[in-house]
Length: 69
Length: 110
Image (cartoon, rainbow over all chains, first blue to last red; front, side):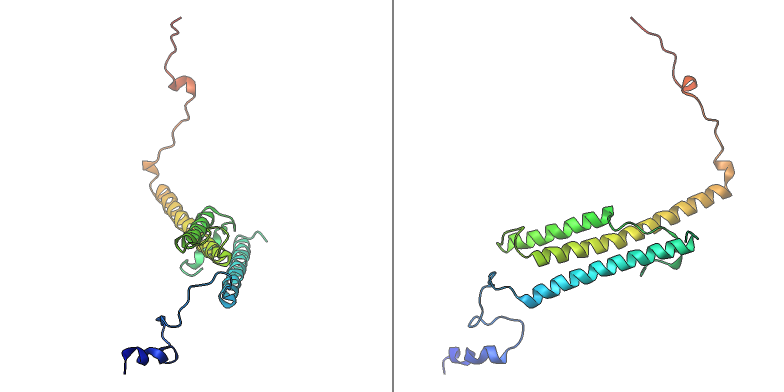
């Protein structure tokens, strides 16, 4: 059997990160991966929220420890 | 505060907008733009979610770095003041001089 025929099922069998040249495609900017975009914006929002919360906690701690409030 | 001891909480926290945050945020933005350029995408208009995420990560790291920096400088100041308190003979109080005493006499050549 020609070796090429053995590769026809590679995409179903090989789930690893390596890209099968039979099914690979160039990344298409007009069709964004909305999951990744959503995760990026979501983690951005989470980080900003964490930052503001940490800042307000630190401010409160500073004021209580120095008797300013 | 993860790597700061409890006594660091006595110090005033840095503002949300601080020097290190601005710089690291800018570096994050530059990284995102470089990533766009290397993948032959328009530098500013592509991957806005990536730019936002990188700026935010840089800002976050910068804020905590500023906190750490403030603590380190405060401990150095405290140790220095303690040393000055324990060795007053090495740090004599000097009489303040006026400029008239320091400056050389002026001889105009007209």
